[in-house]
Image (cartoon, rainbow, N blue to C red):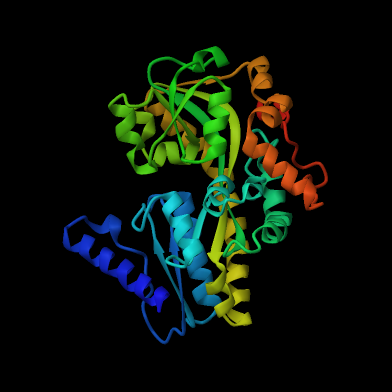
Length: 358
C-alpha cells in the first residue's frame, strides 16, 4: 500500500510539473504500454544527453527485450524526482526502485561507511582497473556489505576520472587550492578530501552548480569530463587542471524488497541487462573523452597538468588513511569482514602517480 501511494504521488508530481509548462526535458522515458506484468522505475540526476542516461536507456531497452515486454522500465532523469541523496533515500524506502550514486552517497543514507570502499580518492590507476573492479568485485563484495540496508547492488555506472576547474586562477599546486571555495557533491569523502587539500569545499546541488559558478558563490568545481561539457560548466570556468583525484564509480542499487518481489527470470533479465549496459558504458567513455576535451578547449578554457610532485602530495597514503575518518572506517570494516580489498593488484589505496599522469 505504501509503495502504491508513493508511485501515485510521484506520478501526480510529474503530471503537475508537465501542466506548468516545464517542457519536454521533464518528461520521463516511458514504455509503449502493452501487457506488462512487472514495472521498474529508475531515477537519476543527470541530463537526457548524458552518458549516464544513455546507460539507463540501454538497461530499459535490454530488460524489455529480454522479458518480451513482461517488465517495463520508466526512467526519470535530470532530478525529476529529487537530488542525488534524495533518490538514494527513496531507493532505501521503496519510493523509487533503482538509483545510482557513488558509494559515499549510499554510505551516507545507510550509515554504512564501508559501502564507499570502491570510491576512495586516488584508488584507480586507470580506466582498465575501474573496468576490472566493475566486472569482478562490485556486485559480490558490496552485496555482502549491503545486507540489512534495504538495498541490493546490481552494478556500476562508470563516469570517468574527475578533474578540477576554477574561475579566477589556475590550479598548479596545492597552494593554489588554499581557501578556494570548491563545489563538491554532498558526500563525506568529497568534503574531507578537499578539506585535506586546504580548500573550502561547498556542497551545492548538481543542477545549481552552473548558477553558483556564474554568480561567484563558488570559485571552482570538480567533475568528470562528460558532465563538465553536458552541464556547460566550461562556460563559467576559465581553467582546468588534470588531477585524476577520483574515478567516479556510481553504484546501481535497487530496493531489496522490490528485487525480491520479482520472479527469478525477471531478476536474471534485469541483472544481465545491467552487466551488458556496463560494457556499453565503458565503450562510450573510451571513445568520448577526446571529444569532451576538445569542447572544453573550444570554450576557451586553459588546461593544465599538475606536476608529478604535486600529484604525489595529493596521493600520499598516510594522508588518505590518517585524515579521512570515513576512509579509515571503510577500510577497517572491510578488514573486519575479512574481505579482499585488492583484486590481483588492480587497485591500491594510494594509486600510482605514473598511472595518473597520462
